[in-house]
Length: 207
Ligand SMILES: Nc1ncnc2c1ncn2[C@@H]1O[C@H](COP(=O)(O)OP(=O)(O)OP(=O)(O)O)[C@@H](O)[C@H]1O
Ligand SMILES: [Mg+2]
Image 1: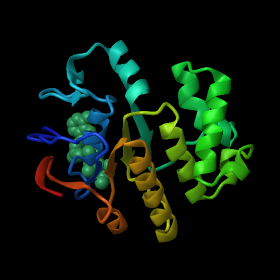
Image 2: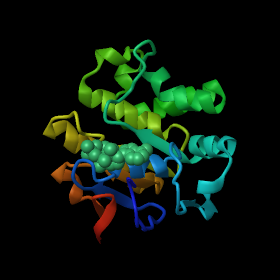
Image 3: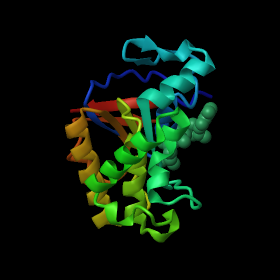
Image 4: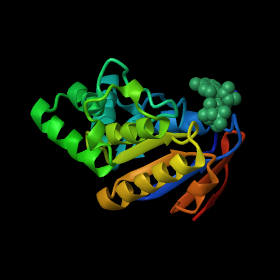
């Protein structure tokens, strides 16, 4: 059985796109394909004019590090690292100069109001703080695309609104393209475009 079939859409640079649909409709599968974590058996994925579905694994990995930032539902902060180190991590993996990274991570943490907690361990933060940190971490390599899979799935409505506002602010400021899987009704009003999936295919797109 195919998890996705007949899914055809375009996201423009700087667009804030919501992906919605019932459980099992293929949202995470779609995001994993877009994030080059998975390869389609058929069809094409084009990022900045390059068909990425046929690239060798080494190039896919480089593109993933260079162009894509991920935000997950379960934050995935490393408990043995403090907050600023967590935010720096994708940059360290990418091989960016450590001092430059530290400055950029500090700047991001200031922007999201967590500069007071920089030295704190990941586990000493609240859920909302952890998710804000996870958004900062997704942005450290200045990706052109940010993918988020139910980023507010574990947050109460106040923190949900804060995360949405934060992502929208960053999206407008940095002109990065956001594709966000969500069930949060608060999110829908913010979208430039909403893609509704059902049974592995696009039911409709509203903008
Ligand atoms: N790599 C894969 N190959 C084939 N089928 C898959 C694969 N990954 C997931 N599936 C199936 O595809 C369907 C869509 O799964 P997916 O995880 O994308 O749903 P979802 O919309 O993210 O659901 P939820 O809201 O529960 O997270 C499911 O029936 C799942 O069992
Ligand atoms: Mg999912």
